[in-house]
Length: 584
Image 1: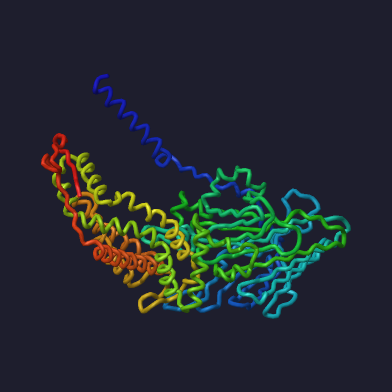
Image 2 (image 1 turned 60 degrees about the vertical axis):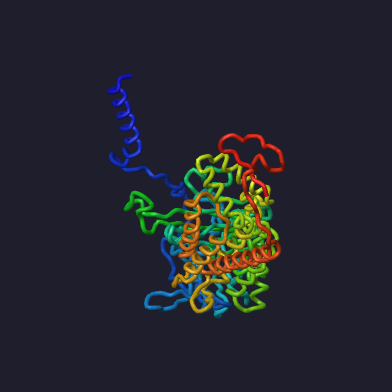
C-alpha cells in the first residue's frame, strides 16, 4: 500500500474514533440511563391534608422530633457534647442524623399499602395523616381512623442509649377481609461529594452503605450495586428493592461512624430489603457530576409479608429503632447481630480481637490515644519473632555493605554475574536473600491492615482529643505535627535498612518513602497517625537493639575475595570473563 493511502486510512480511522467518542456530545444531547424507579409510586397521599402536628421525645443521648404525617422522624439530634458539630462563627450544634426532607423518605415512616393494583387494601394512601393523641416527652401516640381501619402507632424511648420502640396496631373495621403489607425503613441522603473521598481527603465520615442482615447472611450495598442494569438481577423484587434471602435480623443505613437500624421484635417475620436511589436534576444538568446536589437516598427497610385481617380483627407489630454512633459496646447490648454494621473489611476476625483489646486498654488507662499506643506496642511485641529474621538480615546486609559495593562496582556492566556474586556472598555468610527477609513482613500485613481498618471505623475516637496538638483522633492533624514527625522517623528507619539496588535506587528509597508517609498522613485521621508513628518508633528501637546485641555477640569480620589458583594448593578452574567466586 502506498504511503499516501496508508495515511488516508489512518486519518479516516482516527476520525471515526473521534466521532464515536465525542460525536454525541457535539451533535446531540448525551443519553444518560436512569434507574427504573420513575413509574413506581410509594408516596400517594390524600388530596387534602390535615394540619401537621409535631411530637418531641427526649431519651438517653438523643432528642427526637416526629411528625403526624407518616408518624415518622423529622429530626434525631445526638445531645452528647462529643457529637456536636461546629457551624459558622464556631457555633456548636447537636448532630442531626435525619438528612432526608421528603415525607416519603423519612425514617420510620409507616407504609401499609400493597402494590397499586392489589384489591381490598386496608388503607388508601402510602403517606397517612395521623392524629397526635398523646405525648409525655418520653413517648408519642399517633392514631389514624377511617371507614376501614383503626390504627395506633406508639413511639417511645426505651431508656437505653439512642433507642426507640415502635408498636403498631392495625384493626380492620370493614365488614370484609382487608389486606395490608407493613414496611418500616431507615433512610439517609448524602451528596456524592459528601460520601466520596479524594486524593487530599481519602477518608470521609459520611461514606455510606445500606446493610440487610438475615438469618442466612449479611449484604452490604453501595450505589454501584444499583446501576440501571442491576435492577434486572433476580435479587430485586417487583418494587425494585434488593431483597436478602432469609428472615430479617435488621436493616440499616450506615456511615463510617453512625448507623440507623430497624429491628423486628414481634409480629410476622419480615424480609430485609435495600434500595439506593440516585438523585439529580436532569432537567437542569446534562450530567450528574454537574449537579452540586447530585447524591443518593440510601434506604433500608423491613418488609413484612402481606397480611389479611378478618372483620374486627387486629394485627400488632413491634420493632426497635436505633440511631446513633457505632459504639461496639452499645451495639453488643442491642443484640440481633447489629455489630455487623461495623464494616471491618477482609480481616474482620483479627480486627474484632484488636478492638476488644483496645476497649480493655481504654478501661485501664482512660485515654483512647494511649490505648492506641499500648495496642500498637502489644501487637508489635507479639509479632517480634516474625520481625527478628528480617532485622537479622538487615544487620548482616549492612555488615556486608563494603563487599557488596565492591561487587556492584566490579560487575556493573554484567548484571547476571553481579547477581551470581551477590548470591554467593549471602550464601557463604548465611545471610537470607532480601526477598526471603521480606516474607515475615508479609505475614504481618493482615494484622496491620486489620488494625488500620479497626481504627478507621472507631467512633470512639470521634471528636476525642489526645495530647496538646491532636484535637480529634478521628480527623486529620490540623497542625501537621504527626505527618512531619512520621516523615522524619521514616527517614531514620530507611537509613537503618540494608542497602538495596544501585546507589540511585537507594537514594530514591531513602527520600521517597518518608515523603510518601508524610503526604499520606496529611489528611488521614490522627488516630491512624498515632498508630503508624508508634509502630515506626518501635520498629527503629527493635532494629537498633537487635543489631547491638548481634554486634556484641559476634565480633568477627567477613572476608570477601576471588579465589586464586594458589588457594588450597589446587588450581581453580577458569570461570571465564566476569566470573567470580566468593569465600568467607
